[in-house]
Image 1 (cartoon, rainbow, N blue to C red):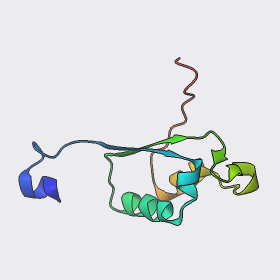
Image 2 (cartoon, rainbow, N blue to C red; image 1 turned 90 degrees about the vertical axis):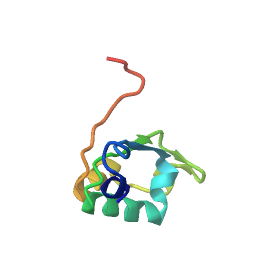
Image 3 (cartoon, rainbow, N blue to C red; image 1 turned 45 degrees about the vertical axis):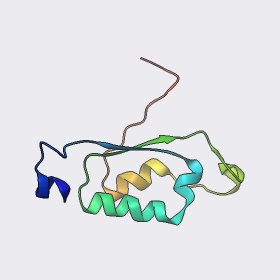
Image 4 (cartoon, rainbow, N blue to C red; image 1 turned 120 degrees about the vertical axis):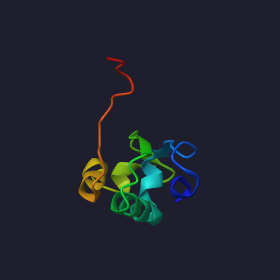
Length: 87
């Protein structure tokens, strides 16, 4: 909306969100994922740390969701990156 009002020269940036397993377990995360995909917010980037741990402990005790499939199903472009392999 700001790009439409002030011009894309002023508002033409990416927004990044760093999130972990626990963040994606919150209900509002699904609303954000759906909203962003529906409105084609193509300059929104989530960097998700898939470390299999939450405040409750290991994800194996609380969730079995496939997060990559979740984002893909909503219409996001998804890439897997091994942060320990620079190649």
